[in-house]
Length: 166
Ligand SMILES: O=C[C@H](O)COP(=O)(O)O
Image 1 (cartoon, helix red, strand yellow):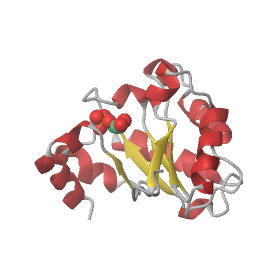
Image 2: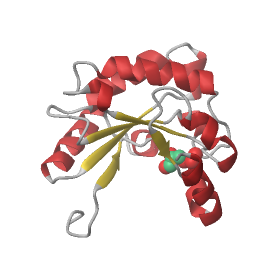
Image 3: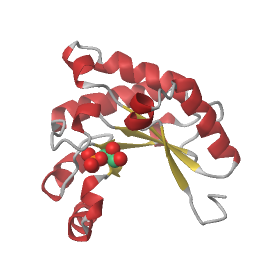
């Protein structure tokens, strides 16, 4: 149905699905496999809560989510990863460029063995991306794009983000 409507990408494992609907890593992986089978590109979201970051568990949480959520047969062509720290989504709080750099390097390393071509997988950052921080975040190593929520509701803001990513 989605492909009939012209859809090419689906977002899976968003923190709201994981937190509010108890969606497990295994369910995310099953949905991603179904998306691949239907010819869709799966954007698989991962990210730690504030409590997990404060407890020093951010890397292990994200590694575990990647391990459980990426299905067999994932490639750079059919899978995109979105790192969305839960505490930054819709809150106005944004991870620092240094934090994003460290986490995206961690994700890149963790993709080895989980996808056919880990260095080519696009890894997006999401969480309060705005016109004022987009360029700085998109310049971070291993950041291949943004997953924009609230700012996408304002055409001028979204356009400013899009143009700052070029
Ligand atoms: O669904 C959207 C993303 O989670 C990011 O949302 P945000 O840009 O409003 O923080």
